[in-house]
Image (cartoon, rainbow, N blue to C red):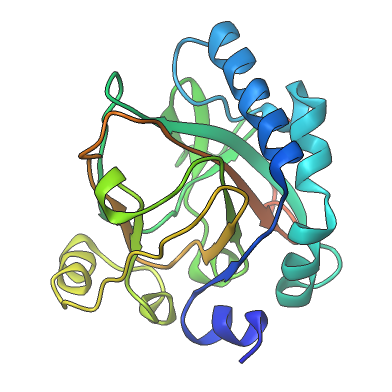
Length: 223
């Protein structure tokens, strides 16, 4: 089964390895720079503020899989670093990635998160959103790596009860990844991240792709 088939059927796939030591080292340095400049949490405009992130987002290891699955018009629209450590040991419950950051003025139904307007498009749009997570450190269950429910994206947008039921199904898996590996997953895939049991960092660069912005909107940070 190729990666496109895996994404269609399971909702995720892995590229091992995706990037080498040099690129990962450069990304770690860039993450440290961004953390020193932006202290209020993840920055969703890295595609605008970081030349390195723009370069990585357009690199062959990513676009090859993205274009094979979404088509040649798919582009990155959001990118941010995530760091889980002894000083910031957060967790995320079972959920789907439904919110898309957009420029203002936004639709009246928009939600505001960290000062950025977000909308929740329909399932047809979200079914064509693909997320890539580049591992800067090893990812494994004990350090709070991403856990996913295979095939859960096929049910479309789920309410809280259905998301919880998917999480309670016992089918969750937590892929083990090395630095440089890329984990692709569909936005509608049910997933979670537990707290880390270790004191060492668990860093990723997350980049989101789609063929175009939601109807009547512009993506945040790209203008």
